[in-house]
Length: 567
Image 1 (cartoon, one colour):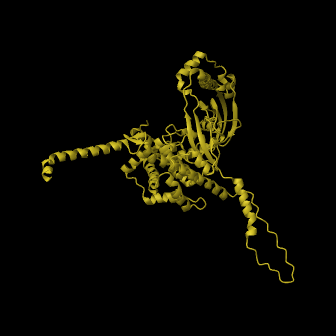
Image 2: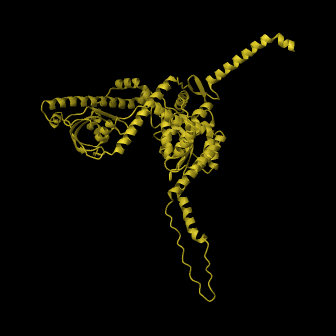
Image 3: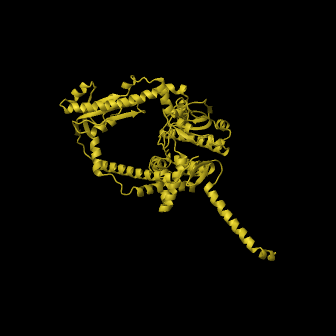
């Protein structure tokens, strides 16, 4: 045997080298592929993250942070900057949920930067964050040990996370704060600029306003069928059918009326339950009539009682979610009904025509309507993937839903889209005409004023309607004015006797589509005491905004360098 070993020593040495190289290659390949199973969700710096690993390093930590942010006002302020910097969708749409793919990429960038720059918040700093900024009693601002222990025992396990996972995630919150201070060092707002801005907001302005609403030009627009079809062909991707969803869901809400009746019964029974005093009557005497007890009158639940009832419903919803998780999402209806919830299933619905209960806003850092969350959800590959987290709706409701069916929006053909295309073409042309009309009118008006006419005479010559407003302050709300702040800001930068530039407003939210300009007649500073605390607060706010912008720009650059690929 030993002879054979000696005989083939060289061959065995070569085999061992090949095995070693193979193991190294496999490790490198695994590192590039990532660990876990399922389809690749995202690729960062050449490494792929399959669904299982993606949930562990992105989806679950994101859920954790959303959970923690609801523990106190301090928690929201502590966690919100981290989530907005790392997880806000790239398009900046405030109605969307946080993006877990974006979150993972930016989280990895932060971790890499923290390692390379030596930013490593200590255990003591993380504990301080938990005690003073996350789990806080709102009544006395002390550490809420009861809420902390309850979260560790019940909520954290359902995320598949440990205390160490939570602490590591919170360590990143502190690391981002420190990185923002480093990147923003030296960036500070000017005290002079702050005082000037405050003074601008304390002005009292008298001005004349001329507007050019888009609706004035819409009636003249009558595009031909050929023009409409050409417009549709150029903008075909804008005309889509309505996306639709079908869900099965439960909404938990305390029965406050029943709770109030219970409290009334308890109050009424309290005197009878109290221990009766010794009222034995001496022999030969007539027993004295006992005074009637008046039950305490209860007309409504206390805030503490309402809050306790709401959180109790949240606990029931959490228990249902955990049961579903352990069963990998199977038997949603059966488990919900067994837990005492009413289960409902919708027909297919659009965002605009959703059930009324889905129009309620969720609580949390990023406030979305329930319908927005439903339309952002995906079916996934396993039953549990189609089941939502528990979401708190409004003041006192909790929602869990299962996504049953998705019908995505599809491009409409010309016949289906032509009416909408015609309307869009009319709007586009009329809004272009309103800008042209405003510019031409302002140019002619200024020439007339230069030649000696008054502003009113020059406006009348063009048959322009002038609206006069006197002594307008920052908080003045002139009747019928949809954008008073924007007009005040425009006028606050114009010298008396001069005319502003054109301001064009295309505001879909407020349905304001117009161009305008103002002539400032008088602009006076209202004398008020400028407290040092107000200036200091504004300085801190503006300086912090500068630091946030610096961090945001840096994160954007690093994100593009990371070669993020979303299949």
